[in-house]
Image 1: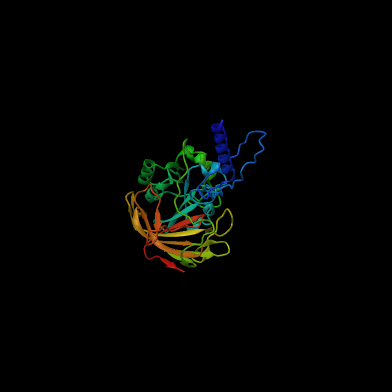
Image 2 (image 1 turned 45 degrees about the vertical axis):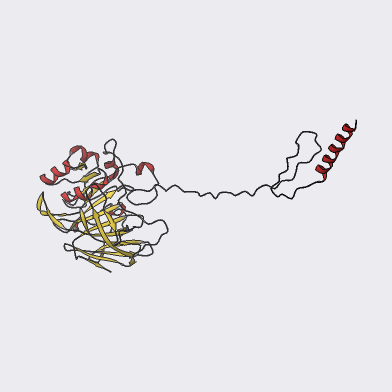
Length: 358
């Protein structure tokens, strides 16, 4: 009996100590209160650990652009079509021409007498376009980076015709009966022969072969809102084998206006002076064409000096190219790419020491 009483007394003492005692150990933990339904015991108050929200970054997908202008695509079907090159006359009797103001890129080449244009259409067209004249062997190298372009021309001598046929161009010569009819070729009664041949870019695109694909990007462009990095410049004067050409920056429009010998060079379709967002002067060497020793051929594989007029500024650098299927690259002395204004571009294939910066 005494043993039982002593045991009960010991249990009571332990219970009292548990009820009244505490611990100073900051690492001690308290068992959670019972959550049994009906329990009168309140759960112990707890402090939730601070939460940290991870910052989220929204990456906007690049806006799809037309490859030859860098401007946003407005018509996916147009963006999917191939490039169309039209050889356009620049004889005095051919002016004003139709369509030069809507071409994405215009290359001006020296030929036997002054210049001729290789107008590259993709994001826009021209109906009618012309006057259309013959091609040259220099076109095969210069335009090879456009991914098998449609080549709309009046035809040429036997050697040039042979070389164009052997190239990867889609040959849309006016000398081919089906092409003549399909591309909407016609002779204008407002012009004298041979400056009277016109066609339709809308019709010419219908002659693209199945599986034809668009051209790759040819130039690099500034981001929207970014300022050009060159030195201020009003424009340039060029002497292209006796043809005086002037380009002047129109700050209000953000474009360069073209004149020939002080006379505004207009476009017949719009009745307005031809303009462009960028003027690239590529200084190139001309050698006799293997197809015709009297025909100069611009050497566009290699490297040389380049002057780029864009946004009222001049950027100087070097053009370079390793093969005819690669676009021409433009870089400054440190190797950084020279950036253009998104929009239309004219490329002047000039001889050395024939350009004056204004």
